[in-house]
Structure formats: structure tokens, C-alpha cells
Length: 309
Image (cartoon, rainbow, N blue to C red; front, side):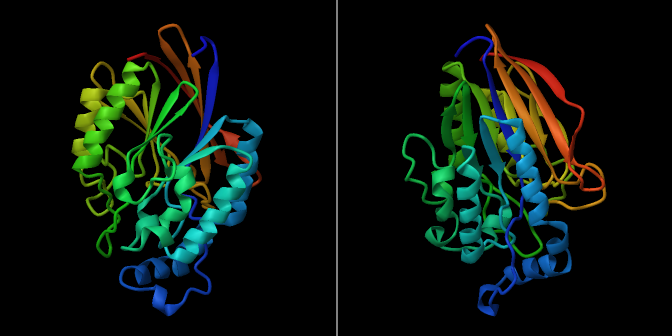
């Protein structure tokens, strides 16, 4: 790791880029009928592909080294939607390397991995065995990019009707703690990706991470430099207690949201991680869709210094 070198990562989340037009009645089993009605009555107007395209054009102009996506590419996770998202991922990753984790909408109901999320394996699997992603048990994943250890978690599990909860599970939390330990000892900047926020204070129990307390305990013991999440469709900045200092946890709005309310309009962040002799200087710059949808403007940036573990 070269002192003074900067690695730049763009964060987007919840693009909900797919369409449910032409979906067959047989695909709307169980909970999916509720998701379809939500799309028909609201989401198809709120989540716009042209807004997402404008965001990506603006993002490319910032020239990040890597893009991370914290889930919810689809609305109800059908095989057809996963095909559509896979094509979009190929187009995006042709110009920018990316890392992806799934969200609760991508795992709306129980479905065969190979027919749904398995189509995104190349963007989710870890470095050690890039073809091994075979479901929830494949997480956490680890990708080393420059000075950064990108650790991907999956909180995407089917939940009951009217619920949008997420769960990590004991095995994933145990492996996360191991990975945080090994990458910390290696002197890497540990960036944790999870769809649901680790501090669900603004969420009721129908939308929260069911084992958020377990995740907080792991981070308290093992530490991390930064947590990125989605799910809330708004800008969020919270902190999780760490072994020495608090760990920032940042959420971003939906990348396709065409809404009027500031703070919930489409947005993304760019992280600039600069290596120092003792750790890293971090600058996070958020960009949000203008009120007239005529481009993206910069919001107030955040800066802090992180000591190497």
C-alpha cells in the first residue's frame, strides 16, 4: 500500500431497475402478488430507468476505481427480472468493476438459486473461489481491491407477507468475525456491505435486520473501518461502536428514485480512501438528483481519519 495513494469507490443501492410489465399470473405466487401491486400502484412511477441511466452517466464522470451495489436490483425477484438485471450488470461492469450484494426484494420468495440470484455470481463471489456462490451460505464474501477488503454480507432471505426483514444468521456472523480479524491484521481498510442497516433505529420490526444486535456485537469485537448499506431509500449516517472507535455506517437513497423530497431523490456517494502512514484519510461525497431532475448536485461531504487496526 503506497502512502498517499487514493482508492475511490462509488456506492449505489436499491436501483429497482426491472419492470413487471407482461408478468404472468403464475409468477405472482404467494407474496409476489403484493409486490406486484406495490409496483403497479407506486413503484413503477417512482423508480425510473432514465434516472438510473443519468446517475450512472454522472457517476462515470467521477471516474471511481470500483462500484459497490448494496442490493435490491429487482422488485419481486422473478427469474425474468434476474435476467434483466444480469444484462444491466454486464453493461455497467464493462466500464467499471463492481461488487454486488443482494437485497430483500431480490429474494422476495423462495426460488432456485440458479434461476435467480445465481445469474449474478460473477459480481458477488469472493476472490478465493469466484464460481462457488451457491446461495445464502456462500456469504460473507471477500474481495481485495487495492488497500480495501470488500466484505459482502447477505441479509436477503424470504420474509412473510407485509414484512421486509433481513437475517444474517449465526454462521455468517461467525465467518464475518474471522474475516474482519484476518483482514485487519493484514492492514487492509475493511469495508462491510450489508443491505439492511446495522442500526435499525428508524425501521419498525417489519423492515429491520432481525439479528442486528449480533452484527453490532461482531463489529464491537472485531472492528471495521466503514459499513455501507441501503434499504431505507434515504441518506443515513449512523455509527456502530467498535473496539477502539466508532464505525461509520452510511446509507444512500435509491439510485432510480424520481421523487420530489430532498434526501430521498436518487443519489450515490463516492468514497476517497487515501493511505497514510498510520491508516487512512476518508472523504465521502454524496451526489443527489436535482429538484428539476436536470442533473446531480453535490451535497455536503464528510471527512475523517481511521487508524490502521
